[in-house]
Length: 223
Image (cartoon, rainbow, N blue to C red):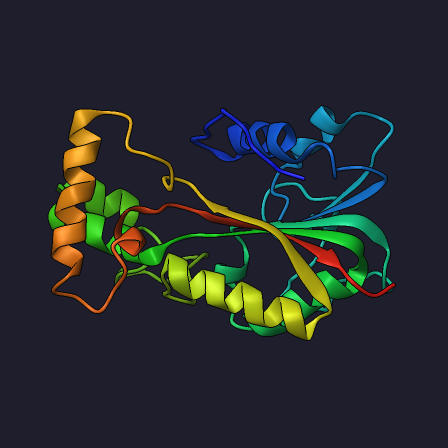
C-alpha cells in the first residue's frame, strides 16, 4: 500500500484536499479528526463516512482540550484517527500520542513539522520569511493563544514516531516527508547542494534543513 498525491496545500482547507487525495483508501468507516479546525474534510468524505472532528479551535463537532482532557471515546472506536500538525502544540505530546492509538481500531495518520527547516529559513531569509517561519516561536510581547511547545527536526520526528508506535502496538505502514524527492529546478538543486555543504559543519542531517512536514501512517498490530 502506498499513499501519494500530486496536490500541495497552503492553508487548512487545501490541506483537507491533500489529505483526502492522498489517504482516501483508508479514510473509511468511522474517522476521527483530532484538531479538526472547521472540519473541512467532512464534505470531501461524503455521507457514507462517519466523520467526527474534535479540538478547541475553529468549529469542531466536540470541543476537547487535549492538554486537560482525554479523547472522549472508548478504545478501538474509529477505523482511522488523524492528528495533523497538532502534537507539537501540546505539552503532553506523549500522552496524546497514546490516546490516538487507544481510540483507533486500525489506522493512525500523523503529521509533524520540521522546526529546524523553519529556524534555518528564519536565519537566512527575509523579515517576511522570519514572520512566516517562526510565527509559533520567538518572544512576543503579548502571550499568544497558540504556540509550538516542542522544537525538533525531521529526524527527531521519525525517531519519535518509530519508538512510540512500537510502545503502542502500532506498525509503521508508510512515512514520507514533503521535499524529500529530487530537486526539480536548477535553483532548488543548487540550494539543496548548498545545504548539504552547510550541514557538514553542523550536528544535523542535511535533509533536516530542507525537508518539510513529516507524515506517517500507523496500523494497529493487536486487535
